[in-house]
Length: 293
Image (tube, rainbow, N blue to C red; front, side, top):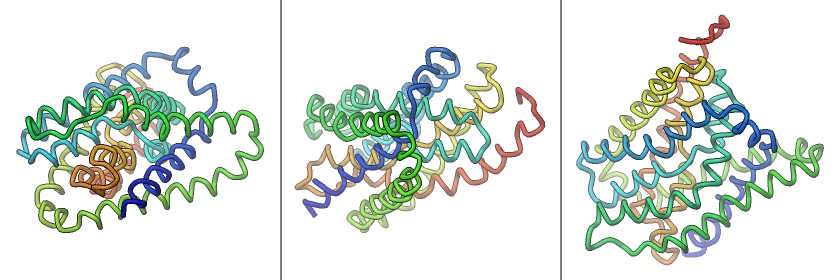
């Protein structure tokens, strides 16, 4: 299990982030500068509102320290490839979705470690495991930033080859996602079954709350319907693979996948269940060409 957690899991995340980088172009980052308002609204939701809403929900459900930290780890993570796919299905602004995912994923090595240390200190108190902010930042840089930049560079230098291999890479990345979520559940199966009565309603509530928060904030900002849908999805759909990996980094490879990883694993399954009817409704919004809801 030590090899699985210490080698297979981080390499799996790196491969998934590499697949994200393959779908990026330099224009995705330039767009942030040219059209900053929608990006700022989306980034505000993800970086600030999302953790605050999750913190309130954790307190409302009275979750234990380890599950509470697990929820906060998930809240600190950016969106992933899944949010881009769901945005496309919802007929949202895919370019905005990709830009948000890319930039916030690159920033995660700076934002996640200190927020993780704060969450550990608050929920675990004197029993909190020490958090090496610098160590986790370096590992996140190697596991997220470097693979994204490698994928971006490959697309820029060899676009024809990238277009050929991207579908295969995407299928492999999806398979790795399923494997990682399944691994986290299997390793913590007894804890999962024991806590399912509170895990399921709390995660479902979180998903509904975040999707709704993203929708309301974007609408109040006066954004067009395509961007409202996008920001709602980007706020509600997080990178659960990164959450599981951060949980493993926190507990260490020798300790295996701890209960910290459980919320992200369950979330990785339930997000599709909750998002499906929302995406179906979003597909009907804006189809007549209206700019606002």
